[in-house]
Length: 248
Image (cartoon, rainbow, N blue to C red; front, side, top):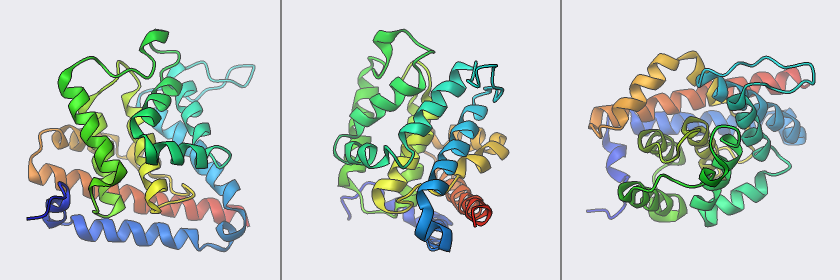
């Protein structure tokens, strides 16, 4: 029997095929002529769209004030997270996430929730034993305790943070950013060109229902969540292609 805790997920209906399709779609968009030369510009647009969509999933408004800033604290936090994952800072974030994922999650939370919680709570998970234990396991998976396809790991990290709700606020934005970082660190989407958040926002009801069922650990629910996540990656690659086409 494999010691890899996530390997059994590959036997669930549709999971292996969905992960392969996601990998192929993202690899194809990285070969787009525009992305071979100017991926930094398309990646920055992807981060911006992803950040706005991620905040909108939490009910945030996208309206700008007279100073061209966001008044909504959730939107402001999501944009700060997006900026941390844009091409100027991505290498640094990837390096930290790969070596010390909990440190990276703490930073993401500090950015996402800066206007939502008291300063002493920024970057600090809730003080409950099961949270510490599950975050430790998540860190082990991120740093090499599993060899499942990257799309599966990204879905698991995303779903586990949503299920665990480790922080007082900002968990959704952090979970989706962590999924992006898994994609970057594993080479699934090294330049973060994909925009899966657009699909998650468009299918928000499915997203909420499926992620809630993921938390139960039911095998079919796990499969449904991973497949939904992979479908969003495929659609996110199509969104990335549209960004690159517009940049020709």
